[in-house]
Image (cartoon, rainbow, N blue to C red; front, top):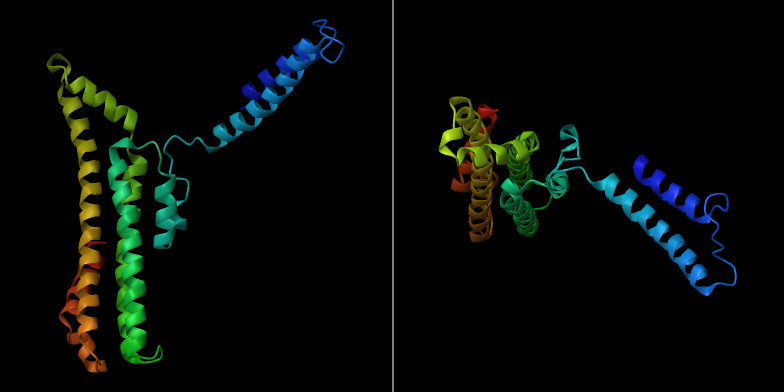
Length: 240
């Protein structure tokens, strides 16, 4: 950035300083005047665009700090910032869609619950508490995935892949490094599949809730969808 701005300043000093080059840009010569105005405009454009590009070019860095990823919305922001990761581009796009689908189903379930219960009833609180726990499992899953993606070195991975295409250049260390990177990729793919399972559980709960005109407080914990969700949550806690 310092080099860019120094070059812009130096160019203008050279062109507009009478001590260096004797150009009277704003005199009677129309061509020189037009050229002078063009230089000024281009200097402004290069200054604004160049500095903006340098400030926002993070080469795939996930800008949102991991400790700040507290909601699915934070996850979506962090994913949108994870540019320059071609290996995971499709995965990131899929997870963005998964977040939107989860939030949409969550809102639909809330609307249906409010048609059956008041927001002060125990049954409503039980459903909402379970859904919030399920959302937390998904958040932690995405956060772990983003950790792996952030640690993934695309340039080294590309280098290993290219080297691996030449039989004479393969080595044990190269194969070991490739396996490590493949493990990153498998983890991310599994995280995407885990998200699908979470959304599937939410779909089953939505279907089950919509079947009943009324649900007694004691029946909530006996619903098959609620049992599946509770089991998934417990397994996630155990894994953590």
